[in-house]
Image (cartoon, rainbow, N blue to C red):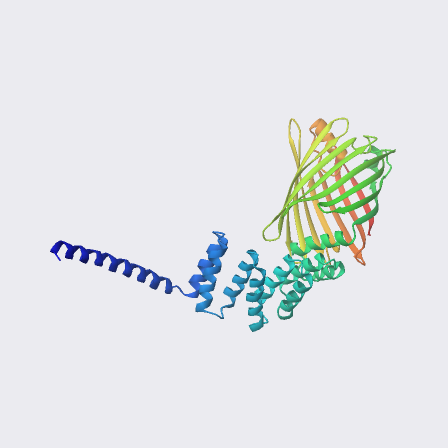
Length: 427
């Protein structure tokens, strides 16, 4: 062998040795990851990269190091579920529950798995197992409502939702579900109402002295996209009588976003607007807040536009709402403010409420129209109280009273007393 061949062989051997050392070091480095680090990598692969096969491999490697690590095995069960490997998911999750019957996350994951696969009996079994050890778990209780509702066990679902709201009225998930449950169980609702307004002498003289009367009947149908209500109003104002037809709807647009829409027609503009319409968007925000943004349009002899902005907040048994109403015209902008508070003592239809308001009265269409015509900002002050109560779940009564001190002509004020009562029946 000549010296050149010898040196070349030595050189190749050195390269091979370096490659071997590199792979050994990599393998050694991989072995140095502990189960927590592998678990974190698996979560990153699943949630950030959407790479479920990689997440499964990393989770299994972590379980080889820590076979009793329940969080990892439960996570692996969820990844199997999301990947459509239902049998593998059941094996992993049932293994956790067999060794740790009180492990809430595994019970919750199994309840989800069976619920998503329409196995409502098994889903309820796992949900109840979790609640046996964690009876106050809000997430398990919400799951139970959804399972019972999907299985058409509406009364049981309603009872669970009511129990949640009695302890935590700010739970928006339960409040939303209880409405859906009522809608599913009773797809129809009829109602009747009466509204009476009395004026003091000065105000009454200006408005032909006679009190105002409004009677209404309505019918609501609950649909898959939200409720739709048709209403007929009969009003007596200014010594005249007229009718108004309205349609209200509350469509669900997407998760955490729904709307209110209204359209109405009347046969006499001195009693009701000839035409009215309105809409609001409601968005559910974090920490039990809800925002509103909308408009109202009134058409008498001329038109008026009203814009509303609101913010609501649930806190324990209370619901707070602040609302700003804006009425623009060509010369100025009128604004009014209303604050409302409800105290819930039961479900979604069981509460007392009170409100105060200041500014242009947005509820008085004639005052809004006067501002729109003459740019005269007629200021009002209002205080209201009310009570709403459900009776045997399908019957709802509501009563309210309010006092309004309103400027009906620039520099001249009068008082109004209003009483309202209504009854609704679900079927």
